Length: 87
Image 1: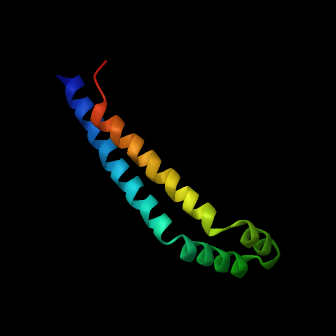
Image 2: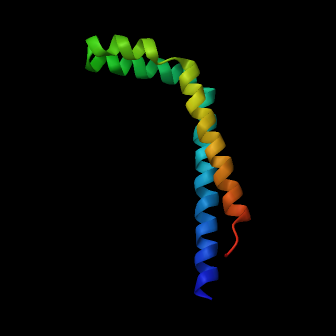
């Protein structure tokens, strides 16, 4: 009996975490330009020399790519939570 309770708890945890990952991923993709600009401003405020290199490398495409990775990870975790069996 303990195994099934543990199983249900693990599934619920996976499902909740997956919803959070998907939501964060969608927010990152939606606001990728603002996130990139905010990150660049924060880097400039801290260290101007290193900031220029980071600003050059930090593009909205990269932020969007990270958001897509979050969404895919959330979908995978959701499927694991829904389809996990007690083997």
